[in-house]
Length: 197
Image (cartoon, rainbow, N blue to C red; front, top):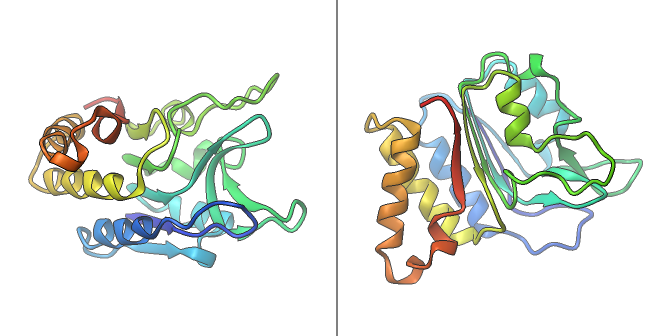
């Protein structure tokens, strides 16, 4: 498994997501020998290198979907733009994902089409599916960092109990929706499953 946690993004005016780091550590603890990339080690080159040998990819951090760029914001700065590097459909090639069986994109708007006018760029979840990744979990709107961390904890607990991905999502939704502080669908309905269960 490749587990990436980027709570703070350099070169961006975004609040740090303390829960993203905790989420990444919690997810990584489920695996025997995870490859973990955090903060400045979460570069585009490092992620592409590790993806090539990974069966599971989990990203916890900021996502962006704007006319200028769309994807996952990484922990390193692009020297040309002086903004954070972005893991996007345009920065990957299908060969990078050849062994991947599950991608969990735990960030804002990862299932939405980039709002790049005139661009042919795909959102990441569609790119992963079209590249042959059989199972993708992605968000349909901006998500709350703490509640997302709680949701992912429930989701992975069920995966490791033997649930299929779609069933693990349904069960995690049910659990999180019954908590007083996360009963509104905003907190538990954002993440959707794409692919084959």
